[in-house]
Length: 75
Image (tube, rainbow, N blue to C red; front, side, top):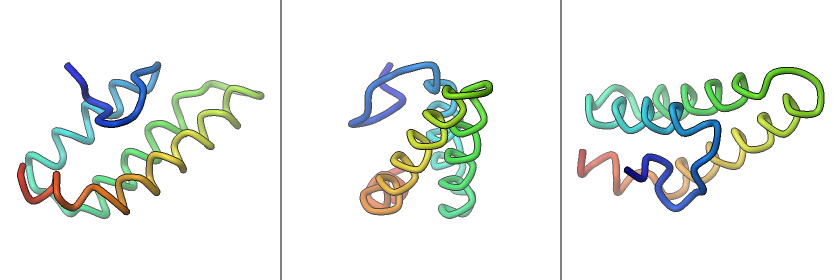
């Protein structure tokens, strides 16, 4: 299944799955989106991977804030 809609699946796919579940449960959208950012940013381990995970998380957060409303309403 494509949990990371319009974004490549990676080690962060479980974070995308949790984000999809949060949208389906209709919890606050900003809460769900911040949860995605936190999950992805925290999934990279340490060192350079941590910086990469933070950048990916921020990119995903910006994407869901800009384009996620249509998916939130459908859930």
